[in-house]
Structures are given as structure tokens and as C-alpha cells.
View 1 (cartoon, one colour):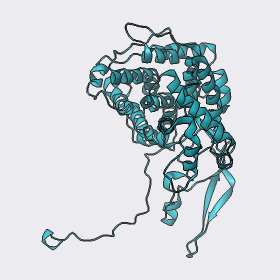
View 2 (spheres, helix red, strand yellow):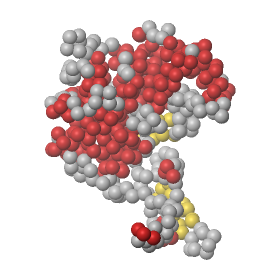
View 3 (cartoon, rainbow, N blue to C red):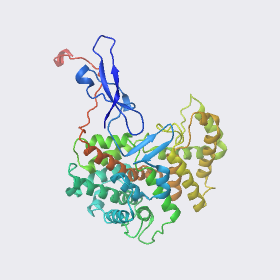
View 4 (cartoon, rainbow, N blue to C red):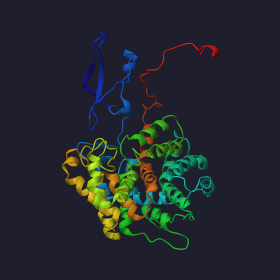
Length: 436
């Protein structure tokens, strides 16, 4: 990271001395003004709620251009990865910086496959939860509990520990999600099978029972694999920043990832696809496709509390590149399962058509986003809405790990410590209780 020849000059109208601030240029994207010495030289902080204008780290993993609708993993466009690679190749890329060759892919796949089972005691840990617990509540507990089962990989500053915990997390997350699902519906857990693909193995653990095996459908397995790829990383979002902040304290990798799971649970983040399906269900109860005009009218009404979920994106000011890919996958899945006449899916397609053609939505760039389509795909596959966010966490685990490892390897990293603009009471004396 080398500073630009150009500097930013900060001047004050109160007569305080001006200050030159270094400017750093990334390989792509906006320039960054280095304010690290600001407080030491001026006694002032910056104020940036939500960190919308603040670069919290120096990263080489994922790049997003929201205006162009561009998403790159290690420089590779998401469209090319989704078309030409599987999820474990994408994991290798995010962790190691390059796509694997044939031998590296075989070795990495075998390594992950050999770690898919979880400690048998996990079953007893699960029994402490109520059967009607939300899967994300269970997942937060299970992922954090991994640190109690795998003591030999909890030192975040040990590179070998980080490597083995990364493989363990990537391998065991599908097993844990499937266990959480089976527990909530009262079915026996299904052990992983090493001769299946990553996505195929997950779907078998989800849908097989001891009395009837599950034969993975290639179209559905590919759809699930693509969901994993498209959600694998997304730069410095809320959950990734949480993992980095948590990991900056030196806590173990399992605890840091559990913090990411907890953050992802929020409806404004990982819960968005769940919210989109719940919205469709609400419109179906109103009367379905015949009432869609009435629903859209409410969405456009500023005085109503009706929100359009699964459309638009905070970062992408253009079409979400992941949504284009999931749209193709969505129609492939609906065709393969013959579900185009399902009331929810008919409603979803009608809503999609309006959003892509209605001037109100087009002018505001409220395009269907990846959450809209991935929610439809998962429901078609047979995954309950309450499990959507847990599958998002499964997919995002590799991104969290890659970001955490990058932070630990950065010589400039420090424990996170945001500042504040304090507007509370100034110093005052405690009065005796009789005089309060």
C-alpha cells in the first residue's frame, strides 16, 4: 500500500493549523484518505454513522462496484465463477487467492469431505434447545460450541490452527444446518456421505430419512451450489465487519464466526430472503395475483407501511449481478419441478414482471435482488423459510474465514475500537440518596 503523490489538505475555519493527509489508491475503486493521525495531530475524530464513507481495512479479497453492478472474487467476475466453477473451487479461491488446478481441487475437496462429520456430543448439545427454536438461534449456539469440541485449533494467531479451523468450519456447516433442521422437525440426523458433492451431500442430509434415501437431482444440486457461490463473500458488510471486529480481540475462529452468524440473523442483512418470501405469502393471503395491483398501490403510497422486500440493494445502484444468475437458476428449478402454477411462484413471477417494467420501480432501480430469487429457489427445493438465513450463513462462512485470516496477517491490524460523538451529561457529583 503506497501513498499517492497527491495529498488531501484539511483546513479549519477556527485558525487551527492545516493538516496534510495521505491518499492511497487501490487497484480499482475510490481513493482512500488516511486519517489515522488525525486525532493525534488535531484532537478531533471523524463522524461516520454506519461507516458508510470509512474504509476499515486493506483487502484483496472481494471488490464491488455498485454503480456498474459488478462483483469480483479475487478479480474474477461472479458471473464467470458461477458458470464455470463449483462452490469448493470458489472456497479455494477465496482462501488462497487463486483458482485450484485439477490436483489442488481434488486434494482440497477430499480434505473438506473428510471433515464433514461433527463430534457425536453435538447431538446432546442440540437437545438443550426447544424444538420450535429458530434455526439461527440454534446455529449461533452450535458454531460457538465448536470451540469447546476442537481445542486443537482455537489459537487465532497460529497459522496451522487457522487453516484446520477453516476446513472444519467449511466442512461442518452443512452438517450443522441439516442437524438443526432435522431437530426442529423431529427427524433423526442423517450422517454425511463422502461420495457425494458438497451441495449434494447437504441436500441428502436435509431430506433423506433412515427409511427412505434421497437421490439428489442434478438441477437442484447445481442450484444449491450456485446459491453457495453467490453468497460466499460480499466485501465489508455488517456480518463480515463483525467477524473482523470480533477476531481483532484475538478470540478463537469459531467464536468469531459465531458472531458473524448472529449478525447475519438480522432481517436487514441475512434475513432479507426470508422477508421476501414472507411478503409473497402475505400477498397470497390478500388474494394472490388478482390483488397484486392493490399491493403495488400500497407500496407506492408513502403513507402506508407496506414495504417491497427482495427488491433494490443498498450497495448495487444497478441490477445486482448475482440476481441475474439466480433468475436463470430460478426458472431452471421451476421448470425441472413443474412448479410454475404454484400460487406463490406465479405471484413472484407477476411481481418480477411489474418491477422490471413499471416506471416507478425502473426509475428507482428497484430491481429484484438475489434474495428475491434465492428465496424462491430454496422454497421450490423444499427448504422451509425459517432455514434460509442458516443456509446463507453456511455459504458465507468461507468469506468470513478468508477475511479473518487476511486481517490476522495484516501487520497494521489492531483491535477494533470505534470512537464516538458524546452528547450525554458532563461530569457531576453523586448526591446522597435522601437529596436525589
